[in-house]
Amino acid sequence: MIVFPCAKINLGLNVVSRRDDGYHNIETVFYPIPLTDALEVKRMDEKFPSPTPCDLKITGNAIDCDEAQNLVVRAYHLLAADYSLPRVHAHLYKRIPSQAGLGGGSSDAAYMIRLLDERFRLNIGIAEMERYAARLGADCAFFITAEPSFATGIGDQLAPADSPGHNLNGYWLAIVKPDFAVSTAEAYAGITPRTPMKCCRDIVRQPIETWQEELINDFEKPVFEKHPQLAQIKQKLYESGAAYAAMTGSGSAIYGIYKQKPSATLAEGFSGAFVDVMQL
Image (cartoon, rainbow, N blue to C red; front, side):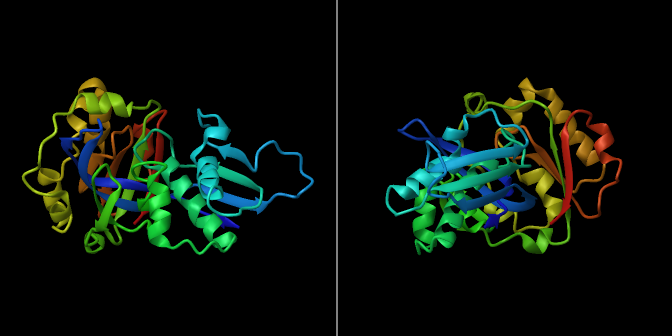
């Protein structure tokens, strides 16, 4: 059985307060995009000599992580603690860039929960799957339904975003991820929490022409100061005709939203970077 974990972008991201537990409360709109990994699970033969009940193979983009600690494996063990699961082979083909703010690892974990639930008829239910996913990462719960969501708390409290689909249906999206990552801890270190004058959920309901002046990712200012290449990428996306461009999450991917399909030569301006163009 194969599923295709999707990436997400953040439409606005505001860090509103610091919590007593050391984390931060945020406000953001998670928006799913058609950039996907592929995840396949097969039942393991009883005679197969595996030291682990979830044997994971990763192909595609390289991941700097012990496969035994991958979120896909952790998702398996999380469910196996409460449900009777057979041993499985899992194959994860990575296409979503890592450490990009696109949520690839979180999506893989959530889709593993979804896949195991369906494949082995666990009948967990969406709300319970979201609770399991939230234990693996702040934004994991979003990917259980992967529908546009307004996220608060540490990104784990979800509500309908009153989808900006009327703004984005038929638009084109360009993703540019340079060949370096941005540390989330580094990004938060440069943040002064504040409540925004206008909630991002309200802004995304407006025509996209208003977003450039109002829809803000709070991480951009401190991250761009340390990595000016990212500011240059954002500017190039605007110069190539983007109606709106921003960093997603804490970076390092930058996206541009276009009313018309961007030029086929777009990638030529971003040597060494991951570049992908897709229709929303």
